[in-house]
Amino acid sequence: MTKQKVVAVTACPTGIAHTFMAANKIIAWANEHNIEVKGETQGSDGVKNRLTKQDIASATAIILATDVPIQDAERFENIPHLQTRTQELIKHTDRYLRQALAKEKNVTTVAQEDDLQRSAYQIFIGHIMAAISYMLPVVVMGGLMMATAKITGQFINIEHSPFSVLDKVGFMTIKFMYPVFAMYLAFSIAGKPALIPGLIGGIMSDEVYKRFFDIEGFMPSGFFGAIGIGFFVGYLVRWLNDSIHVRQQLTTIKTMLLVPLITGITLVMVMEYLINPIFGSLNQLMVVFFT
Image (tube, rainbow, N blue to C red; front, side, top):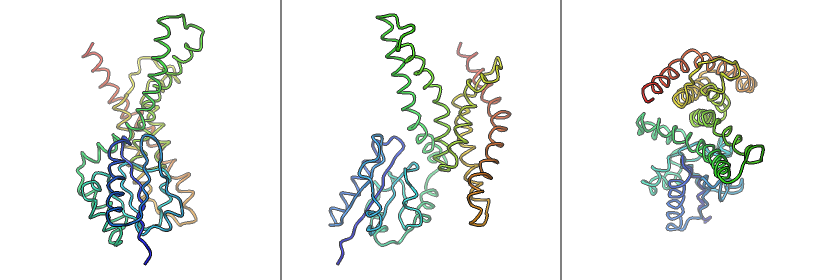
């Protein structure tokens, strides 16, 4: 009798705790039941123990315990697998592993059960945390570059030196904070088709957007605007992809032209005439109140 084999991918918003806890749970359960196992982790240190095509093809069961969109998700398209969240798998390892091995569930039904069990608040926070996990490296790298330049400036004159450039590049890097956040918030909801619309919306939420037009007195919508447009774009793209049905031969036109065109026009109008005015005014009130 051929030995059973379980392969898994685990990923959580921060890429630290639940990613590896879920992977360890799967490995421990498989070892206890004398089942071959390989677990790919997509954590803060990158992809480790990557699953190959051979691993996936030879697997008896495939488990995706993920809270965020994973890299190379297309590997599992049209392949039976069990989808759940890391926290659920950690709590109910035995149940999910047995389901996967018995092939009692498929990706659609398991995902639907998890969404029904999660409250709107949990879904909201899950997407926010996923976006923050991508935004943090931008803030950290920009902050470190600026800090290095400014600390060096306490001891020597850094004007017209590489440290001056480092300071400026660090500041520029931090200005990408909102675009990256909005981009990956939308990505968390609708996947790759929402990346660029989210990026554009994030750029419009920052003051650098109005600098292109030399408009004075503009108060950016900032973090609130990035949250608003990220959710709007993500769910808009998801809805368009689910609602627009075309023949298979026209799928490329739908994904490359139709959905981006509708999304682009809509997000610009919503950002310019709804989100920026509302949250920009809110930010202005907060500035007046706290200063």
